[in-house]
Length: 517
Image 1 (cartoon, rainbow, N blue to C red):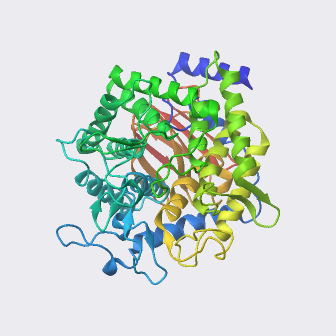
Image 2 (image 1 turned 120 degrees about the vertical axis):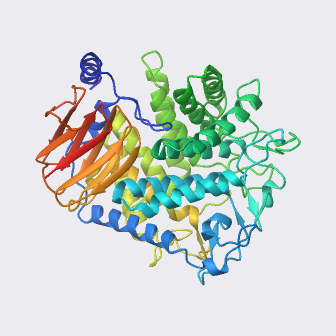
Image 3 (image 1 turned 45 degrees about the vertical axis):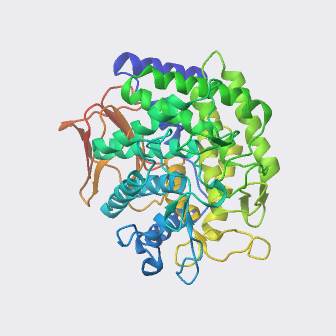
């Protein structure tokens, strides 16, 4: 496999230039080879693809309904906002007894989920909501005269910044995640305000990075006083700084990325201390989490090179097994169930589907079937037990007796859009055989429309896309010119269609692509 991959990359570089890698922290650093592997035919269990599609749609429609908006907190001007702006949880009766939200982390989840749903359906409402949530978060970030300016708050309570376990502090790692979401929205819309918001976060984090490469877990953004030091969430800032360097060429961002990554390698990757992450966990309380090692695995896959291949793959496999041994269970009846953290051992649909997305990338990186089986078993449990009838999420897939199931966390619903879509992009057999859907891009999709006779979309220049189609396309054009067939995508412009998997891959230099039937 390594030899074949090396040949593919060499040919691509010689003939057309290596396509850019997907945005961090995605494991995809291989360009065409990653997409070609994803396009290979594989069989999904009967009915699972349809269940995945139904789960995405149910979750999206619940979020679009703004259930209970008349009961939710209004903004400072008295205007209504989508309930997920000011509330992390909606009660079963569409009221809001939980009066806090976690903007930096949860709003990034929502934004990315909406962008994925736009790619999947071309529904403009998804793009409108992505802009709306970004605009609100930008307007409610720390002011310019703070020592840590331009950062989104990790907690809002009763419509005001701070509160709960964060108190007067915020979490810099979550700000980095929102910054990464801003960069994605900037590339989708071309609107400079989203780049400026990302740059404001990046400059603050770069200037406030500790000399050892880390950042504090909780800090008072006005005074600079550190409230809590350790977090394994530094991976978020590492990925964000990588993206900002790609956008600007500023080596200060590259330095922040590399020193942050070295901190990750010296600390949680080596010590296995993955405690200190979620906003609602009190200062000093230990809670080992799944999410930080999951995303760190993706970066280990992304950053591996000939000099560290064995080491990084060894770390990735070890972290995978550590989480599977301590927080997961592959139940023969229900499927894979993953618990969120040791302080709250609920088996949430979000933790399970998020873990599956990383496992899908592990499968494409290694070709080992056990990682694909994790994805299939996770999808089996999430599509059966993840959502309530109207599309809002269960808090736990194991029933309410121990951990309760009153209300629904928006952060457990939005990952259905974010991660099931990404699973489909790695394993297209999880997408429905009927209908047409763009499932993965190496850049961003700026505009897309699905019609009976053609699909038209605009990406960024120099991109690769993966689509699952109901029928073989008759022709593909890029930049107004017919693109040739290219079985291995080794030409700068070309396409291939695999009838067994119903997958179309398109590689192109110009941004505008038309697929005709």
